[in-house]
Image 1 (cartoon, rainbow, N blue to C red):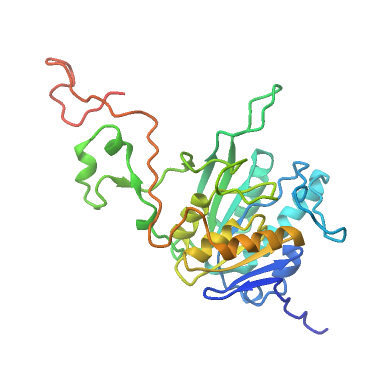
Image 2 (image 1 turned 180 degrees about the vertical axis):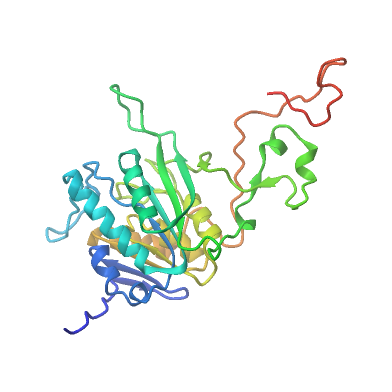
Length: 317
């Protein structure tokens, strides 16, 4: 049986190589050369959630443009999910990293599936945002689960320096201990596993990052953290659900090669315009520094004779 020919990208840029393919990502991963050869360094996936969203509703699309069905039976959705996850796992290098966004509905199933495929969980992060859909019958959803898995924890790419941020000990308490750490990086820390703060919310309305005509969009600072921390310049980044193009846009600014698969022809064309014009916030030569203290600066002076007045470094909330 003859081998399937490699697909031709619908859109492409060079230096670094950036490609957008239109169609089902499961089919493309079986034919794109780098996927077949297991040469992908980093995969960032934010799949459809099966929440009855019309991801194409804002597009002035031609009648023959394919429309994604985001309302299928649960068993069909899980089969679809396991299929694309397994394809991503096959495409990864032995040193590769996989990131998956998923809501409460499917987090448990996906976590178990990835572990059964012998991937190693590095972190189970939470992306927290303030803009949730209003409802009265239960608490409002304001988070997405962010799974960070790899094939080999001893060989994964992990870059700490570009993602460090000021600690609460430094920004709130002026605690001298944080400036005298043996490991250096005075007053700084690796980000915690709940991600929130300025520029971290869902991209809505008149936000200057907003790409018109797309139903859903992840903030650039989110992809900056993922790409800087878990890939290197020249690495190959894959997004199996390109959407508004944030992954390839940020990857290109950070000098990574990238591939995006997008089901909708109209969405792919719109995303590519954004990719070619560059990101709004992220700059290669200036990593974003996040400062997200939840309190103002504290007065650390203790009254004379208090139980803590002679205990240097003790902080009271």
